[in-house]
Figure 1: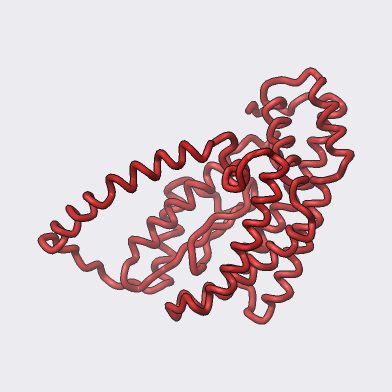
Figure 2 (figure 1 turned 90 degrees about the horizontal axis):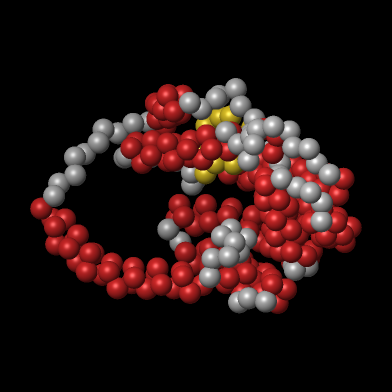
Amino acid sequence: MTDREPGRPSAYAAVADRFRRIGVLGSVQSLLDWDTATMMPRGAAAARGEQQATLAAIAHRETCDPALGDLLARAESEPLDGPQRANLDAMRRRWLHATAVPEDLVEALTRATTECELVWRDARAANDFAQLQPHLDRVLTLVRRKGEAKAAALGINPYEALLDEFNPGLPKAEIDRTLGALERELPALLRVVLERQPSHSVPRLPAAGAEPQHRLGKALMAALGFDFERGRLDESPHPFMSGGGDDIRITTRSTGEDFVSGMLAVAHETGHALYESGLPQAWRWQP
C-alpha cells in the first residue's frame, strides 16, 4: 500500500469510514485483552467478560449492517486504485464472515474465551488440566457452531470456513499434505534426537530475577528500534503483542531458571510490533 492519503470515491469512502470505526473498536478490545493479561484484578473477571462481549456485539452489529452490503456493492463499480481494491476485497471478506454468524453466538464465544483464559492461568500454575477442561470444552463447542454457521454461508467445510478468516483461500487439502509429511518424517527425527540427547550437555544459565530481566528486555527492544513513547513491556502468563500504530503493548514471561526464553519472547513480539508500527499511517484502522 502507498503512504499517500488515498483519494476515495463516495461509496468507497463511506464503507472505509465504517471499517475505520470497526477497527478502532477492535483496538479497544485489544487493549482490554492486554489489561486482562497484565493488570486486571482477579475480582474483575466477570465484569471484563461483559465488557468484551458488549464491544464484540457492537462491532458485529456495525459490520453486519445491511447498508454496508449495499455500499460494498456500489463501491465495486467505482474506479479504485490497487490498494483501494485490495482493501475493498478485505472489507467484503470481513462482512461475509460477520453476516454468517448470529450476534448472540459472538457474545457467547467472547464471554467463554475470556473466562477460559482466566481459568487457564490457575490451571497452568497447578498443572491441572481437569480444572480447565470444561471451560475449554465450552469454547470448542461454540467455535464449532461458528464454523458451521460460516460454512453454510460460504459453501465450504467448517474448518476451511474458520481458516479463511486468517488464511483466505487456503484449502484443507494443502494443510493435510503438510501435516501428512510431518506425520511421516517427525517420528524418525524424534528417535535420532532422543538417541543423541544423552551425549550432549546443556550449559546451566545463571538465575536472574524478574526486574533485571525486564531491564534487559527493554534494552533489547530499544536496540531493535522499539519506540517506548508509543508502547511498553509488561509481564503476562504467555507472551503476546497487542495494539498497533501509536499504541503497542508487548508482554513476556520471565522465569528465574532461564532468562534466554524471556529474551527470545521479547525479540519475537518486538518483531510483530515493528511490523504493526511500520504500516502506512494513511491506511490505519483499515483491513
